[in-house]
Image (cartoon, rainbow, N blue to C red; front, top):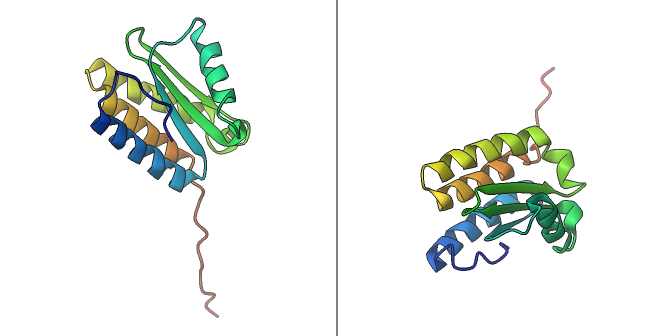
Length: 132
């Protein structure tokens, strides 16, 4: 469930973002949360505090975005980090920033959450028949 986005996103935007979070959670079995709003300084420490307040933070991923300050932070819990490494988070953040710079805050958030969910997706077990 996303952390409330305040006045930055409309109710329709919130629903679209919530749907992206739901899909990412189904794919990865992690908990995703989004905070859009003003971040305290230093922003990384603020994002880590928000993440710690989520409960079950070891399985959680928090995306914090302060559009006015141009800040984006992705915080992963200890177990989430096993399937979603720094490279995945940096790649996703770069993709999100491109959307933000183009003026598409919602699209950047939705696509970023979906990208993180796909990156953390647990591989499916393939059942193969042995041919003799």
